[in-house]
Length: 231
Image (cartoon, rainbow, N blue to C red):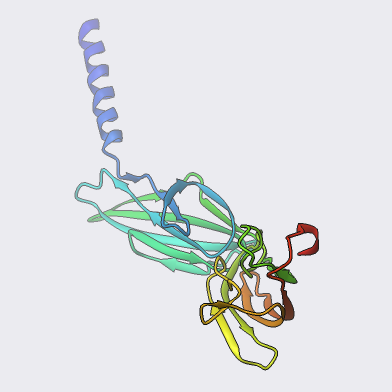
């Protein structure tokens, strides 16, 4: 009799265990994509804009249930979602500074039976405030230091950018849109003469700051570099 009782308890436990294992659920993931196109799976991110991110629901044990997805992105401390999407997987570009909370809810439906899924811990993305600076001079003398007129290292969260260089007579001699690019000091393949040139930059930060930089840049090809004088 005792053996029969133990066997019954075991079968009930095994049946419940299998039912729990087949319970519809999900294992959502967040993947951030850097400027080189490399992907990294994370649960939180703190860095610069623009940021490309991909969110995957990864449903499990769906069986005959029909999953209804709801992704929400909330900019803290607000409670109202700025984005609400209903696809299994979504892509989103973060172009504003601040902290964002990303959460997934799924309703698994089969007839009149509904099983609700909610993430234990939402994802978070924090985008830093913007920063953009340019030097006052550059020395395209081929020594590998300060040979290119470009924005200073350490720029942050710049979501749009346009730079142009003009001669003192107003002729445009260079234009670029990538923060990593710049002017090598040449005009038509030949080095420009030493002297003053005019730099115009129009850029937008993720925090809404508009950068309208209008300044004179000195080209000093024949001068040996002194890092302290290039700030």
